[in-house]
Length: 393
Ligand SMILES: Cc1cc2nc3c(=O)[nH]c(=O)nc-3n(C[C@H](O)[C@H](O)[C@H](O)COP(=O)(O)OP(=O)(O)OC[C@H]3O[C@@H](n4cnc5c(N)ncnc54)[C@H](O)[C@@H]3O)c2cc1C
Image 1 (cartoon, rainbow, N blue to C red):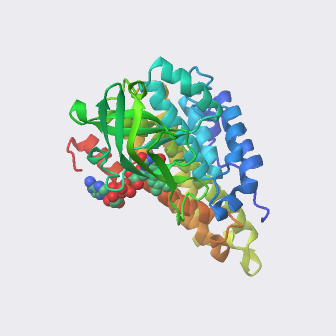
Image 2 (image 1 turned 120 degrees about the vertical axis):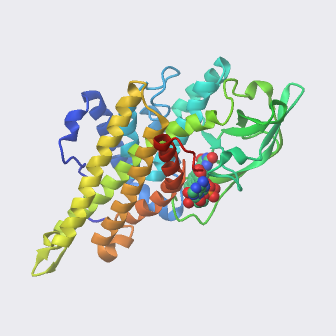
Image 3 (image 1 turned 90 degrees about the vertical axis):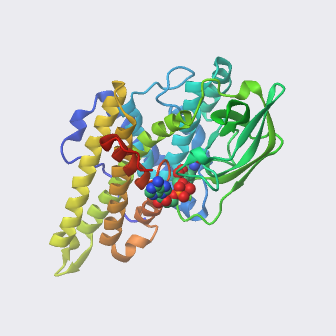
């Protein structure tokens, strides 16, 4: 591995906008990633292996359900939570995805829509990483429009019987519990959430192979054929499509921060490389105006993205955030990170395509991040709807 070590990115004394606690969370996560993920991530990415050995230590550091209160959770503020996901994704989007799913898409719905018994059963164990979750919303035929879902739940006695297929489900084959979103036949097809233990008869999960993105994260297809769950496994406070969308909002918020981390990794690597690499007259390529223009574009966009998520985080802490704010942060920051990855790859020349450097991995990962949790264009429509009042879906 070349001697390029991440140094952080702060152009406008951004750190002065953070509290001591916020900086502590960021620095602790950064150190954890530097010590534990960076040494193994390229091997994981090549092998298509999720680094499961990091689950327990991540639980011990309080990464799971970090912004929830009680049940052993860290009770972090939203900016602390965001800085944590930023640092996780500086390491790898796949590992950040795992944490986002465990926290924002699984623990959050149990916390928000679950009964006391469900919370006591799952949250402490999930916080420690002893139990893992997955979130089944997307189906083979419905992604951007989850309202079209075909998965159905039918009440039979004191059980629900669930049938359907879910696709592109992060952590599907390693999960102990799946949050399955289904239309309930006895409730005029209202969408509701169910806790489905993955060892129930009729539940099957298979990994999706051949992915060139998020290779260090498990992605699966789920099949539910007459899966029977006790009626107590219905998330009682879930109701309508609004419930899964609330979960997605949580996860999108973390993604908006995470993308800044991926961009910072690419930019800092390209900057250091450009100062070391010499081509003409024994001068570093950083001395050329065209290279400086690319670096300038990146540091400007990263700085704007940092400020955007920080303001969204402050609004979230104040209970004033709106879903369109989170859409703007997700849409802008993931696009920005992808552009940074492409420009950084370019600055590294041929070396940019090799996994001696993290850039190509980030670039490929960010293609998924652009698509999941609402595609870039779907977020355009959400923002468009909020400013015009017109639904263009
Ligand atoms: C690695 C990975 C992990 C994932 N993890 C999960 C998970 O854990 N749980 C889960 O439920 N899902 C997960 N997903 C699924 C993800 O959320 C969906 O892929 C996403 O919602 C997009 O759906 P789709 O792929 O079906 O694309 P489509 O909805 O078919 O969209 C295809 C294209 O059409 C565009 N489009 C769609 N509708 C419109 C419109 N009205 N106007 C203009 N353009 C439009 C989209 O922007 C996109 O460009 C994951 C996906 C990936 C790649």
